Amino acid sequence: MSLFSKENGAVFTGPLNINNPIAVQVLGICSALAVTSQLKPAIVMGLSVTVITAFANVIISLIRKTIPNRIRIIVQLVVVAALVTIVSNILKAYVYDVSVQLSVYVGLIITNCILMGRLEAFALQNGPWESFLDGVGNGLGYAVILVIVGFVRELLGSGTLLGFTIIPSSALMENGGLYLHNGMMTMPAMALIILACVIWAHRSINDKEK
Amino acid sequence: MGLKKYIDQKVKPQFEENGKLKSFRSLFDGFYTFMYVPNETSKVHGSHIHDAIDSKRIMSFVVIALIPCLLFGMYNVGFQHYRAIGESADFISMFLYGLAAVMPKVVVSYAVGLGIEFTVAQWKKEEIQEGFLVSGMLIPLIVPINCPLWIIAVATAFAVIFAKEVFGGTGMNIFNVALVTRAFLFFAYPTMMTGDKVWVNGEYMDCITGTVDGVSAATPLGEIAAGQAVSTDVMDTITGLMPGSIGETSVIAIAIGAIILLWSGVASWKTMFSVFAGGALMAFLFKGHLSEISNFEWWEHLTVGGFCFGAVFMATDPVTSARTETGKYIYGFLIGCVAILVRTLNPGFPEGMMLAILLMNVFAPLIDYCVVQANINKRAKRANK
Image (cartoon, rainbow over all chains, first blue to last red; front, side, top):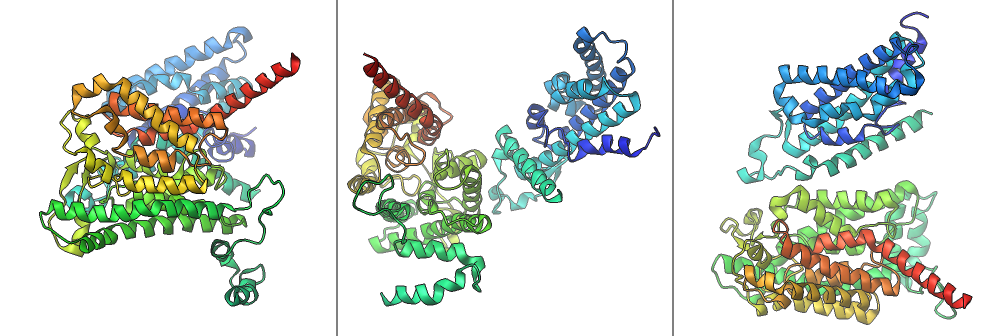
């Protein structure tokens, strides 16, 4: 099978849309609510999960024939934990402020359902290249939703995007304007509602295509 | 009768499936059934599960009961304004000032809410649901006077879509729509809504009157939460001549509304009574705690803030309250308890009525379930004897 065959393309693009881990499988919701109050942590989180899922998939796929079936979960956890530690240290070294903002949620990638789900459902049955594509696809599918939610929350909640001011401060009510930031957008409750709207839009678009 | 005949024969066909104006069918239908009694209601004689009166008529009674609060609220807005700027004014100019400040809020609330309802009805090809008649009147009454119109519009849209339409429309909602509007405002724009301070006259009113910038005045509950002495006396809290949200200050106006609701049988006296019972008991139990932080008598708690307004107009909402007769006592009692509990023990929330009612909305089905199960068990035991 060639590297970029149609099947491999489907493995990669499926999780981005019709099989999206958040919008369709409704996995990884917890971190999606926790880290999306601003766009930057959402992007970093999405990329971290992408990297970890991709490489965990590859490693497990390479050793899938030697893992004893009865202890496979522990082996998977060790691999994921090692990768999470590496990513966490890289974040601390290069983007310290974001890593402080993400706090425990980087460590909690270990418990992200998407990771374990992909390892169990895909990497244990497929070769390393397919597993890599599947990991990247799922990670990016997760990241896309995080970015959408983070975009809406940061824009409406604090009037900035990636820290740059979008809504001018002269429009704010305390400076004589008419606008007020929506404080509820910074709360996780509103993230859940935005996520629900994203899922709603996603499903109605996909239903029409059928 | 001539007008109805004319509408039936000439105007109505335009809005039907093949008519020219069919995209406005739901709009026409809504106004038609509101102005005239619909043809399909239960008969008055015999036994029916449905009442002969349709829900639009019930809603109209609630709106009528709200009118005293609305009119008094308008007067109070003007009264507070002229007191704040230190001018004396006669009754008419106070009322007109309030009218100019309150009416846009009523219009915005109805326009946004009904607009969404009509759109959804048209889209789903359903009959127009009339539930927003009451919510649209409640929303302007439970916001502070300086709340900007666009914020009211956003909050109303949020509540109608996420508290009502996603659950299936009128009659299916778990939460009281007007209270969800207020809760959204409370959490999204806390500077507008914290309840410890209410702007007596907002800056945006300047375009009408050209007077000073906003003057803020603390509400009694805000003073309690801050541990200060309360500056409002009892007479003010009963007549309602004090700062607060537009419709909730006057106990007398609310009492008139309560009498209309009880007389017409729209609201349940059991819920209403037990809210006050629960609130009174809780305030009495916390008497020592209250006197420590303020000079406020325990029973005065029932007259300030949104307590009366919530008890009369919100807790008795037939959709979101408990439906069993015993359940209504439990439901109301717990609302009263929780409201006072939030007020006294949590300094972050000077007002607890909104949160209490929303919390008990969640529990209402559970209360009903327990009451029904208890009854089934009782009767089963009796049958097995």
